[in-house]
Image (cartoon, rainbow, N blue to C red; front, side, top):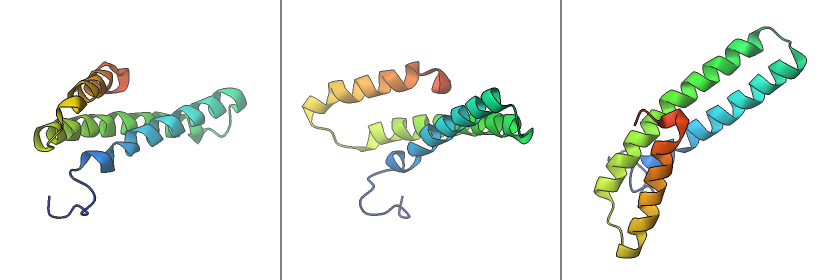
Length: 97
């Protein structure tokens, strides 16, 4: 991981924001398409954003698993990290992890 900046201990903090942004923007595009119904390309753009969000969520999940194996955590952080992992796995968009 020599290409990572010094402040990033692993890839996970860098990729986790992509699925969040893509899914939120996809939901907004879908909402606008539902309310307005125009332009025609908005529906396919929303579908593409959701698909990219799902793929990037899987990448974020895998990078989170790798981060779990590489980061030294103090004992009190284990329940928080386990809760974070449970939420990630139980989220429908990344249930493939």
